[in-house]
Length: 336
Image (cartoon, rainbow, N blue to C red):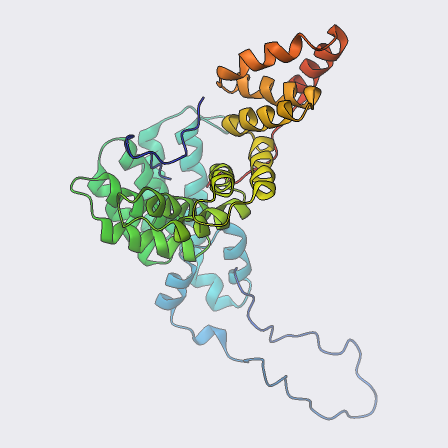
């Protein structure tokens, strides 16, 4: 399947939707054995805040913990009994979220059932989990109930969920009429919170200039952040920016670095471009491998170049290249 990632004004919009800090341990490892002589009391370091966590209002605690995943919820629940009791609804929502995903994708020994999936997500959302709100919103969006989806995304976004913020921003770009101010506000918030997909979408907005005024410096800044975070399409786009000197100084070395990285992460257009570069440098065996991968990924133009190279290789070398392609695995990348 072709990845259409480089912005083109003649094309329609290609938008796609989509630590827990440990509190100071009051039991902080006292001495394992007491000396027979009396020891003087040593106060905690001045930079450590000691307090009674059980005094934190439950409504504030629930808002803080709403975007937590199960491991963070378990860690928070272990702080004290009050927190464990207060966070019980959110722990329950994690089980409902798990069942919702099973019903949605037909996993874990159950048949796919979107109605049951939505019911589980909504029950999890009612218990305060922003993760369940986002998944319920996705189901509503996919089934055409976009107003309900936006409502759930907004609720999750206002509770600090970066995925909800990103989905809300993208939703404002896709609904009619669009709301570019709200879209950029929530995409920027999500990107600032470190969500890589939002960083990429924000870069597209600045690059295309359809939502806000074109700003190539901002576009490349966010492409680079997303690429460094493992977002493959951003790797490809920042390579093109370096190649032509768009938004940053032209740098062929960095262009090649990011193009190869995108290719190694499975981007078929990058595999084609990298294969061509290797061919021009006389690296025939490496070139034919990347061109073979590009062709399998849907880049039909790779076929002609590959055949030209095949005529220059022995049968054993060609077979070795095909064997390498058959056993090739893309490096893991960030898709969320």
